[in-house]
Amino acid sequence: MTGTRTLIAYATKYGTTKEIAEEIQDILTENGIESDLINVMETGSIDTYDAVIIGSPVYMGKMLIEARDFCQKYMQFLAEKWVAIFVDGVSCCPPGEEAERTLIAAIDEMKDYVKPAVKKVFAGSLDPSVLIEADAQIADMVHPPVGDFRDHEAIRTWAREIASAILENNNSI
Image (cartoon, rainbow, N blue to C red; front, side, top):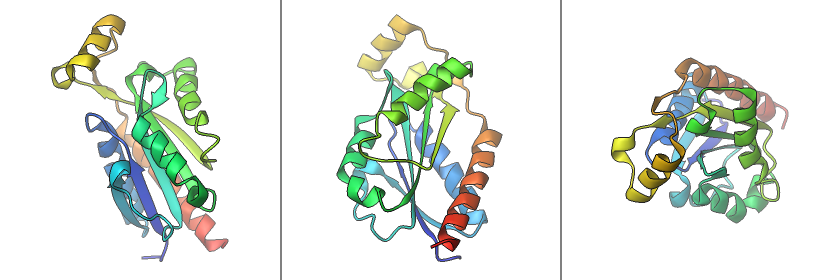
């Protein structure tokens, strides 16, 4: 391992974002980067990490409250770290510039707490059979696309780019 330690902190509601984070962790490991994958609600001290990757689904135009709280709670530490943020959601299915712009806006809302070096949007996944009642009611009103729209090759490609950026940033310290 290179000595570069990375925290992958994710928020998830139905597991999709965690699965994306796991794919990212696999690629970081392949590139010699030690990483810890931790739910944002279980994160303790982050001061020993060189880089932080934050992941969250976007619901109703916002990152999950747990992810927003994480950024606010750790903003002092995040200011000193190399940070990347990814979001996912079915609102960018089908993918397109307008849909991506909406999801990037959810990241940009965090600007008072974190200044990510990299932002990324991924298509998400929706299985109506697992939704809690409130989410099922919302889905009934807005009729989101149903299915798994994740592009796993795009996730792995981005993770390789992130691995390179983390290593480059660590070597410049």
